[in-house]
Each structure stands twice: as structure tokens, then as C-alpha cells.
Image (tube, rainbow, N blue to C red; front, top):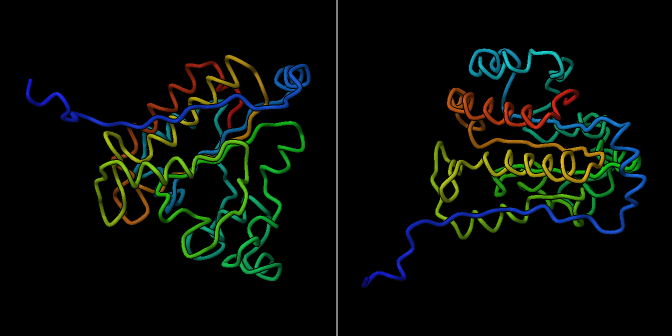
Length: 244
């Protein structure tokens, strides 16, 4: 009874807020016609290494209705040039000619894949773990304005500061009571529940994780089982007919 104020455990939860100023009739029509698009990325992962270290996930996404990006090949060192190739269609030489990503406003001036989806009436989302070394912020200025409708970075920055963290291979592996990547995949699950099942709206999301694989060649072995478990949960919602 003397320890009433002692904290036994602490956790953090994100919540999907309903968007403002949406045309519900148009959203319903688009949701019935347009496929929802979810991209899941694992940092520092080649195709061969993926099949070798994540066999359960590899077998799962080989099912009908799931797709691997067969043409995704490395175009430069580090994550940024490779992810920008996917998101902007630009080579490192092309986006460096446009502006210096270390300067404020440069990243905001580029046109991204999610911008095309937004113009087509989609809600957009982007989530990435390891906020301290995230793709668009490590040694760079980052975005001045949120690049998507649902941007998890600020939530992750706060919880990495206030929650207890566990390090592995120099990176934040656990935040609070959970693995870092679980916040990313839970966010994807919440978006699916909110805008695929409850209030159907066309949705594009990119969910990127680095915490298991960035500096650990064998880290993906530990990631295989939980990742495929999340994919099965997404499939159980009934929305896995056409995910990417």
C-alpha cells in the first residue's frame, strides 16, 4: 500500500483522427472503385537476403493478391536516394540538380508518389520507425510541412524521448514495452480499420521499418515471425485482395 504511485508499466498509443472537409459521397464512390494501396518496406534488405532471412514472410507474400516490387534495385548509398527513386522517379543526379536536401524546403519542393494519390482523392499516410535517424531527417532538414495526411513522425519523436528504450546494434530496438517496428505496423492496422472497414475511403500508405535490419545483417531473422503475423492480421480484415 505504500507504493501506490509506483509506475509498473508505461505504453504509448497513436489514434487515427477523422479527416476534416471530406466529401463523404465522393469518398464512398472512390472506395468502391479504387484499390487501397499499402507499401511495406524493410531497410537494408536485398531480395535474396529477404528470402533467406524471412522465409515465412517470403512464402506469405508469394500468395495471390500480394506483390513484391521486382524492379526495385539499389541506385545509391544509404536509404534516401533509393527511397526517393521509388517515391519521385528521380535519380540522385536529378534531385540533386533541383535542390540540396540539406536545406530547408528542398524535400517539400519534390513531387512524391503519395501526391499523385492525393490528387486522385486518396488519403495518404507515411510512417517510419527510428525517428532519430529517419530517412528524410538524418543530417537533413526534413519536411517543413507534413508530407501526407497521416504522418507518424512527431508521435515517434515524443515516445523515443519519454519512454524507456532498449538499444541493439546501436539503434533503438524497443520503445516502452514494444518493438519499435510495432508502432509502424499498428498504425497501418489502425488506418485499415478506420478507413477500409469503418468509414471506407481510398487510402495510400507507406510503412518503413529500419530498427531490426539497419545495422544488423541477421536482424531480419527476428523480424520474420512478427511481420508475417501482422500481414495475416491485415488479411483477416478482408482488405488483402489487392494490397501492394
